[in-house]
Every structure is written in structure tokens, then in C-alpha cells.
Length: 253
Picture (spheres, rainbow, N blue to C red):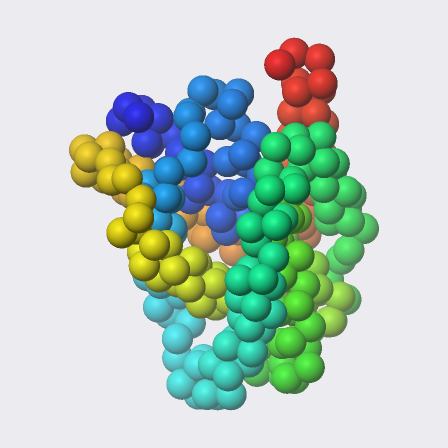
């Protein structure tokens, strides 16, 4: 792996981890298109470390909300459990079934993109108004992101909006969930590194820095977008990207 490939993968991971456009779909679909090689556990762990650091720093101004209402911490943990459980039980099965199904991944990108065009903000509830059942429902929805093309941030945003939360608060809850979800992925990957081949730090470090900086930018960009408009720009992007890669793999590759 070259430094350029490392940076490109870091940028893809960082931008798509927090924007509701599916990081797993982008990494799976763009690797063969851009010639970025096969996934590597050692490298992927560092990419997740970069995005984890980005969201931890970005959310610093929001931590006071957790101190004012500690029940939110419990609700974030409850919302994390379904994805963790489904991940342990089904991640390998889903990966084997769908990882190379480029047409199916593209279709999921398009279908969820269409939903983005239809779902709008329908209430003004804040994080502090969240009920335990709502947190669990968002967490169950998050588990669907095991399917590449769904998007963890995308599905949690959609469900939160349907439950009547303001767009900004829906995004912030998604960011809080990403801390526990990405953190769990990072820790699990780190524990598995003993059996993985290691890459040179000269290759890993550029990707880590790229994922960190692009992750910070993606968090800022998403929050700014939802404060001024709805999720439709992401819906249009998902449809365009999904259709483009579908055509590419159908007729070109």
C-alpha cells in the first residue's frame, strides 16, 4: 500500500463515516474502482481510531448535556446494544453474503436515498425528551447498518426524525452513538490485531491523519447542513452514486 492509497482510504472512511451515505458501501465499491487493494485489519483499526478521535473532539461542547441529564448516557448505551449483539452474531454471515454483491449494495444506496427524499422533520423534540423505548428503537434500526449501503448515521437519523426529534438533535444523538459504536469496533479490532499482519507506520499514519481530519470536517458539514436544510441533498447523492456504480459494475468492470 502506498501513502497515496492510505490517504485516499482515510479520506473515504472519514467523510463517509458520519455523513449518511454509508462508509462500508463506499469502501467496498471504491476499492476495486480506484485500485485500492484488499481490506487490512491493521489498517482498518487505525482508520476507525482516526474517526473515533474526530467525533470525540467534535462532541466536546455537547458533553455538558450528558452531565445535566445522565439518563442520556444510559439511553446511548441501550441504543448501542442491538448493533453490538447483531454484529457479534451476524456480521461474518452478512459479510460473506453481501460484501461482493455490488449490485445489491448499490440498490440499498438508492433505496435509502429515496427514503431520504420523503422523510422530513416532523417534531421539535430534543435529546432530553428521549424515552427509553425510542432509544432502543433507534438502536435496533442502527443494527440494519450491518448491511453495506444502509448507513449507520443515515438510518439513525431517519428513525429519530420519524420519532419527532429536531434534525440537529437527531444528528447529535447519531454522533453520540458513533462514539460507542466506533469505539467498540476499534477495541474489538485492536484485540484481534495479534493475528493480523502489520503494515509500516509510514503507510498507516497518513490514513489515520486523513480519516481524523476528514471525520472532523464531515461532522461539521453534516451539522451545518441539517441546521439549514433537510436530508434531501444526501438522498440525491446516494441515488446518483448508487446508480453510477451499479452501471459501472454492470457494464464496465
